[in-house]
Figure 1: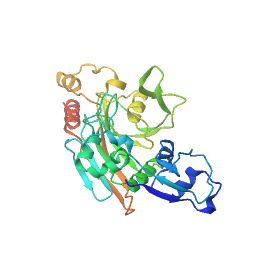
Figure 2: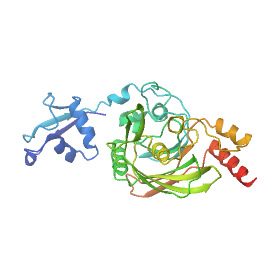
Figure 3: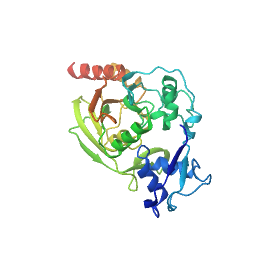
Figure 4: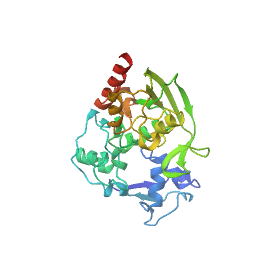
Length: 314
């Protein structure tokens, strides 16, 4: 991205510089502007300044969004399943086993690396256009922004809960009915790698609807109202209905009494959490159109449901 020069109007004298710039640059989020100021990508007469400093009026601020976070992310030829694409967004169906973006232990081979290979222009957008993530072993629908304006709009939709995300999950136990789980989520004080329901966590709300019941398992729909890390996995585990195949929140594989060999084999060989992002609904960031996409269940979840159905009817 080229440098941007902003002249602060005299009428804004005395206002905080980060607030002024957020008003004058509506295509960029307040947090992105604040980050640019703190990292030295925004300068007044070649000198750094603090977000809380007050405007004197008529100063010239030069922005150079260097996209530092993306600089070390390498394009990689990794297959992508594109469901929809136009000039502003990409909707894709992520396969399980794919990490969303680079981080400790996974600097390559991620969805972000694949996106940068698919469209090199995404190197100009924060986080290669990614606005929300799916866990490595969760499959299904995601939206990616192709420019900063669309990214800002989509992030705002996520924050206002106007993007609807529905998941299919297969859980342990016979769930009598669905309901809403509204319990705060934060780092597990006993294990910093995990999340947990904790009193000082961030507000989190998940709606659960039963799709089908089996003798010892339940197929449910989970609808996110917030988007905390591992939210569905944590909330369902908290309910006593952890996801099949989830080693972090489900523990060891559990067999019901008098389980058949087919069921034991199916549960033992299900090697990821049984969670799929099935439906995505959002308002297009440019056209304003309400759009919905649906993804069919992946083969592994379909096969598991078939085994459960056959055992119940047998």
